[in-house]
Length: 434
Length: 173
View 1 (cartoon, one colour):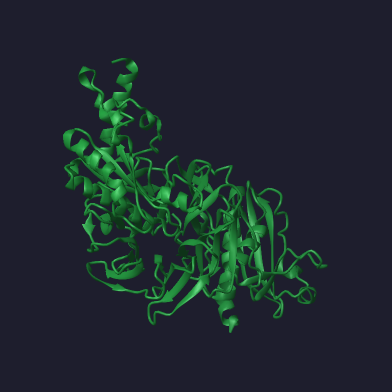
View 2 (cartoon, each protein chain N blue to C red):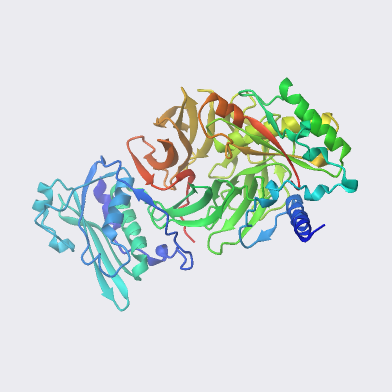
C-alpha cells in the first residue's frame, strides 16, 4: 500500500522552496524557545543517522532539526543510533540487519560536503525491510540555509510515509510577553529562528497571517486603543487598516488576501465588518444587538464563522460572506469561542469552557459531532497546520503559557516550551512562503 | 507659560491629532510609546484662566473618581457607581471642549477577543449613561482593553472585582 506512493516520491527537491527568509531580517538573540520531544509514540520507528560533516561548515547541524520535525508530526518514533555498529552516510553504507535488530523500519542518511563556497547536502531515506530507497534529495546551498534544507528533508520523509503534505517549512506567529514588553514573534514551526517583528509597551493581540504568508494583521494598543494594523514581513512597513472610533480588533484575512474581516464598535456594540486589506471603508457583515466577534473565513471564502452571545453565552455561528441570517453551530456547553475552519473545510476547531477548563475542541460541519483535542485546564486560540493534520494552541502551565501542537486525531501532542516570559495568541502560517 | 508647559501643550496637540485620525495612515516604524504625558497632573489642554481651579484637578471633587466598577458578569452601571458617572457627565456637559476615552476592562479568563468585546460593552454602558446625562457623543469614545491590562493580577475575588471596571480618561491628562 505504501509502496506505490513511495515510487512517486523519488526525486530531487527544488531549491526555490527554500528562498523565503530574507537576509536583512535580524534574528532576536534573546528568544529562548526550547523544543522538546513530548510525543514520541508515533507508529513509524525511524533512525536518523547524523549526517557526515554536518557539524562543520553549515550554520546548524541538520539531523537534530529533522528529528524534532518528525517527532512534532506525531507520526514517527526516534530509534537511537548510538549503539548501532553501523554509521552510514549513503544508502550503500546501510547494513540493514543491524538496523532491523535496533528496531528501525526506516533509516535516514546523508552528508554535507563543501562545494565552492557553498555546501552540497545529500540525503536518502531507506526502507529497512525492503532494503531500498524510498526518497532522496540533493541540495546545494549557502551555510545559512542548512536549516531550510533540514525542514525540506523532514517534509520529504513525512510525505513519503504519510502521503500528506509536510508542514515543516511553515512558520508560526505568537505574542511573547517579556517583563513589560510585548513582542510579536515569527518563528520556524519548531520554534527555531524566532525573530521579533514588533515590540511595544502596550498589548499586541490577535495576529493573523495573510494567505501568502507575506503579511501579518494584528491588533496593537500602541495608540492607547485597539487598532488593526497590517505589516509586511519583508519590508517591515506597517499601516493602520481599521482605526475607527471605538475598538478595532479580531482581524481575519479572506482566502484571496484582498479583504479583512474585523470587529468594529461604531454601532455601539461589537459587530463584524469587512474592510479592504489596504484599508478603506467598512461594510457591516453581522447585524445584532449582541456581541459578534472573532470572525474567521472558510477556505472557499463563501462563509465565515464568528462568535456571538446573541443567545446568552458565547456560541459559534456561520454566516454567508454576503451577510444575511447566521446559523448557530455549537449547542453543547455554555461558552464556545475562537473558531478556525480546517483547510479542507470539513471541520472547525475552537475553545469550549466546561467545568472551569478551556478545552481545545474539533467539530465536524456535517454531523456536528465534537471531540476534545486537549483537556488541559487552560488553552487558547487553536489554529490548523496548512495540511490539517495538527492544531497549534497556547496552554497555561504553572502561571506561564506555552505552545502546543496536537495531532487532529488526538493521538499526540508536542510542547514548544518557552523559558523566558510567556507566549500567547499563536497562529500557524500558510504553507506558501514569499 | 514656560517652555515645559509649551512643549507639553504641543505634545498634546500632536497626540490629539493622532487620536482623531480615522483613516489608515502609512507609518514606517512603530510609534514610540510615551506614558509621561498621561501621568502629568497639569492638564495641558485645560489651562484655567483667572486662576480658577478646574474641579477636574480637585482631589475632593467627585470627579477625582475615574473608575466605574461592575458586578460579576454584568455591564450595567450599578447604583453605587452612578454618582461618578453623573459627575463626569455634568462636567462634560458644561465643558464642551473636553473629551474622554472610556476604557472597559474584564477580569475573566478565556478568549482575548471575546473579553475585548465584553469590556467594550462595559465602556459603552458608561458612555450611554453619560449621554443620557448631558455629555455629547462627540466628547465620548468607548474602547476596551479586555483582559489585557488587569489592574490587579491576583486570583482573589477582590482582584477580579478590581478588574471589572471602566476607566474614564480625559484627553490631555
